[in-house]
Image (cartoon, rainbow, N blue to C red; front, side, top):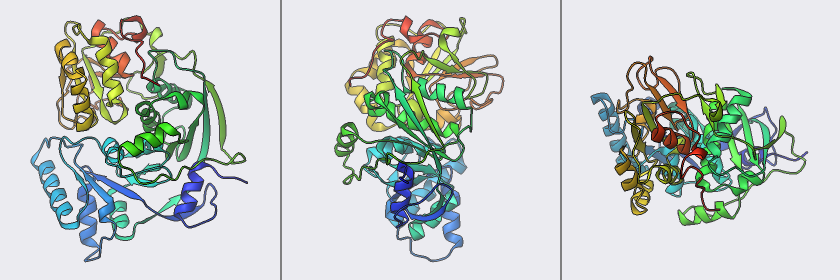
Amino acid sequence: MGSTISEKILARHANRTSVRAGEVVVATIDFAMVTDTRAANTIKMIGKLGDRALKFAKNTAMVLDHYSPPPSLEAAQIHSAMRNFSAQHSTPIYDIGDGICHQVLPEGGHLTCGDLVVGTDTHSVTYGAFNALGTGIEGTDVSAVMMSSKLWFRVPHTVRVELQGVLQPGVWAKDITLMMLGRFGAEGLNYHAIEYVGEAVRAMDIDDRMTLCNHAAELGAKAAILEPDEKTFSWLRAHGAKTPLPTFADADAHYAQRLLIDISNLAPQVARKHEVDEIVSVTDIDRQKIQFALIGTCTNGRLDDIRQAAEILRGRKLAPGVRMIVTPASRQIYLAALREGLIEALTMAGASFESAGCGTCVGITNHLVPGDGDTVISTANRNFKGRLNNKNADIWLGSAATVAASALTGVITDPRTVQGGTWRAAA
């Protein structure tokens, strides 16, 4: 019997010829990452374990992205500890404003096809866009990784999802991920790996592929992973990644499920009612007013997302009473958007920009706090009640195009119905 992509990567890193779903293996890690939300636990555990060599520290990045900028003295002290630790142990460090962990790791050339990558954030599944097996772990696990370069894993069962057809202009990977949440429910694929394949995936640019993998965290997936192609290799070369080891599933691999989904007629989707899996088509929403719009986060803060918004809002104004915040996923994305004139277009339309980071998405920095009764439409990955520090406000999720179209009209709007809403990335 053949193997899935995830099984092959885990077998190779466990120095095995093959592994099967359900087995527990000890595997060697290629790269690790710890964010400021878990770094205190990591550093504390290393102290408890005594004076041991951290031979993997140079392959473990410290990322200051959630408390960015620090909203409290405690957060600032964590950042100071991370900087000191990095200086002492020569770990790569991404400081305030450099960007979100899931963007700066691939941008920094820290991973490639066939790698096994771990990070202290559930959305580490994003790295599957590059044919790497990425998954989330705890801060204390990173302590073990820095000492040994190894970690134990239970080999996940895999669901193979073949996406057929071509997305309509104005419909994006975000809409596919929301559709998947509506189909399976939150945590519906707990501890599974998802292999996304098919012509619709091959047609996607890297930005959309990262979105497709990122949202697998809300499905409870252990990993989401794509087959590599020339787009993958070209992007990795441009960012200085090491030589890839492309990994494909065998034709006779065993899957927990095989799904064939035609996305040709998929309409833009939105999540509502404080639930990531309460999914409806935007065409079924009847003039739901909004007061706040957020474009950004590790799910949809990339250049194509900002382009989507700019195509809709260039030369126009936000609807009266609507506020918009844009948070690029990295400093590099902000600079690219600046060079393209996207920052100016959105600023002139009435949007405000935050430095690259996670704080606005999670509500840590309190830069986006809606009032009682306000409705926020966001490109974030979660809309839990009270996530933006007000349980009396509603959060809806949608693509950058849907968020921008809604900010323009003041009500949740199908982007295909407004000028610029059918822009699509170059193939």
